[in-house]
Image (cartoon, rainbow, N blue to C red; front, side):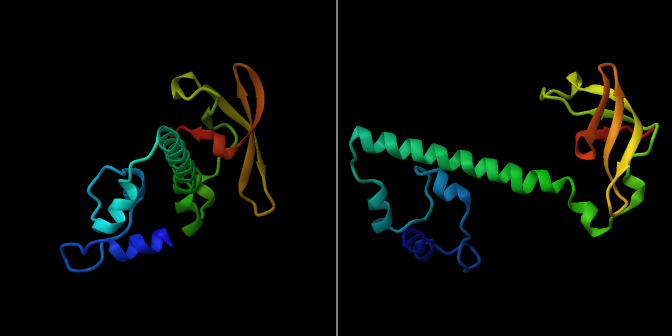
Length: 151
C-alpha cells in the first residue's frame, strides 16, 4: 500500500509524464523526492531512539541486499550476455593458451598466470573447464575463472 501511495504521489517530470521510480527514492530519505506533503509527514514524524535505530538497520540491510542483487543478477551476467546472442567457438579457450587464473585476492596483480594444458568440453561442445599449469601446480578451473591473453 505504501508503494502504491508513492506511485500516485510522485510529481510529473518536465515532459508531463510521470517520473519513474528509482532506488534512490527509497534509499535517500532526506532528498527532495517530490512526495506529497501528506506522505512526507509520515516519514518526518518524531520517533524515539529505538525506532530510529531499527529504521537505520533496516535501511542498511535493504541497501546491502540491493547491491548484492545488483552484483549477482546484473553485473555478473553482463560479462556473458553477448555470448547468448551469437555464441561462437572462436572465444573458447584452446590448449596452449596463456590465461590469468582468478584467485581469492581481489587484486588481479596477485592472480597466477598459467598455460591451458587441456580443455574440457560440455555436452554442447563448448569449453566448460580447463586444466591449467601454474607455478603452484596443475589446477582444474571453470572458464569463467580464466581470463585469456590475446597474443
